[in-house]
Structure formats: C-alpha cells, structure tokens
Length: 406
Image (cartoon, rainbow, N blue to C red; front, top):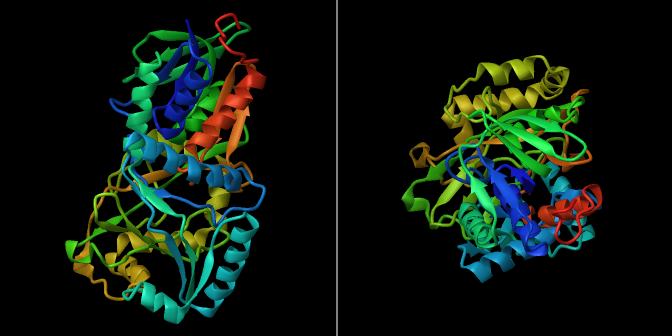
C-alpha cells in the first residue's frame, strides 16, 4: 500500500508529489500517469508563459496563486537550470473601448500589488516598431519557460526522494473505504492507497464523479490552435504581445508569444473540441461528445456564448480570419507567415446552470482531494497550488510528518 497516490503526470500532479515528499521525507508517493511520458496534454501544449496575474479578481485563488507562482517558478527554474526568460508583456489596445478596458485591467493589477506601467501609443511604437495600438500596459515581470523541462526536473527529484512514477496507468475506478482507497487500473490491477489526490486535468470531472463530487459540473474541452511565425519574424517582437481580453470570457485572445527556442507563435483561439485528448483538426470522440450532449450546462454555455463561439469557429476554419485577428496589432504579418504548430486543449469546468468556472475548483472526501478546475494560470501557479493541496491534506487527511500509520 502506498501512502498517497497522485493521479496525473502534468505539472500540478508532479509539483504536488514534489511538495509532499519534500515536506514529509519517508512517506510513499505513487504518481499514476496514463500516458507513456509526462506533460502530454495541457502542460506540454500551452503557450509557455509565466503569468504575472494582471487579469485576476483580487482575493481570488487565481490572483494569489499566480502572484506567488511567478516568483516560485522563476526561482525553481534558476536553481535547477530550466530554460526561462523574462521578456515582459504588453497588453495592447486597438480601439477606444479597449482603452477603457485596459484602464480597468491596470487598476486591477495595481490592486493585486503587481508592477505595471501605462504606455502611450507613441511609446509603444518605440518599444515595439512592428506593433500598432492606441496604448498599452506593460507587465515587466511576465516571463516564458520550458514547462515540460520544469516537470522533468521536478520528476527527477521526486524519484530521487523515493517517489514512484508509473506510466501506462489509466484509472478506471476509485473506491473509498474507511481505511483506504482502492484505485482500479485499465490493466486489471488495483493500487491500494491511504489517500488519493487527483490532478487529472481534462478528465478531472470523471475522477471526481467516481467519488461522488461531480454532480453539478462537467469538463467542456476547448481547443486552442496556434501558428508558428515564419523564421523571418523570429525577432518581430521583443515582448509578449497580448490583446485586451473580453472580460466575460475565460480566454485571453490571440497573442504573439516569444518561445523558449527563439521563435514566435500566434494564438491560441478557443474553439469547442469534440474530443478531450485528440488534437486533430476534425478530431471526434463519441464518448466525449456524449458526455457533453447529456450535460445541461453544456447547452446553456453554448447558447450564452453563441456569437463568440461562432466567431472563434470561423477563425479556425478560415486562416485569413485568424490572420486578420493578428494583424489588428501586428499588420506586417502575411498569410504565408503562419506555419503549423501543435494545438492544445483546455479543460474548462462548467456548472450545471451553464456558468463557466473562472477560478480554481478543489473538492475532497475523507481520503481524496480532487483538482476539479485548474485553468490558466495553473502552470505558473503549480508550486503554490501544490502548497495549497498540502495544506488541505494536513486537514482532510490529518497529514502529520510520517503518515504510515494514518
């Protein structure tokens, strides 16, 4: 029997294993990952940004975790030789309405204690000659990082501290009793654990449902499609360039991102995905589609966001529309500059009434903790999230020192 089984080998799962083993030397921790390697899904398919926390409501878990995660991520990467840079981010407004929203974002960032600075249109042209806009807000702390590299570094430490990482271990059942949790696996075997922590991302609702914790929400997958800019644009920007986001949506819009490796990507958009973990343009999964169709919140969120959803779908279907969204603030881009780049799929928790869950959602039973919604900036926030999970475990699991007797 293992003391703690962690389901999911993304950055949150591995950071949690790392934190538990660091704080409680000698306990047994087993990470169950259904793929043949770590970071196969959200962790390995995002924009690689270390967010500063400009967008998030003061007092929210997002705001707290992101502020702490910014410093923790930079510190960990510097100590362990993980590739990272701090180019800073410019939020660029291209209309009077966006200028008003930009002012509100700047005020929110200041309320969160972040370093930001207003940039005039003239100063923007000096900072970024290839970018146009009426004004901008500069976040100098924003960075970029190799998140899969960070996961590999933490995983190596997990193993060095005695942790076990098992690949090809798809969870099919979780059965909790008074003294243990039985985790059934697809190969017919079962793992006995004193406690379970589920960090399952795109399958978070399914694992939560096994423990009776998902009656009121479901995961709806949204695909984010990226393009890599042609090599002639490797130096097109020196900062990360973001549009002013729609405050009613949980997505940040199509942005230009300098990547570790020296190239630039544009994206992502946000289109409904008909498969949770299949990244093809027309990918479909019957089980995933059935789960969406029978969840009433799905139809409500589609109804409430019909106009923006159709616009995102059109941008996905027609590359010229996608390009036009980029040209709003980077007019020098041409259609031939958009080269293929791997897409990602974001797990978005939706409540039964159609409400999008904007913050982290964490639930627990007596012996299990479930990360039910871990939206961006989850990668930036992985170490503070792991610390938060540890604190929950201290209470929910009565986790004290060496827990072999618990």
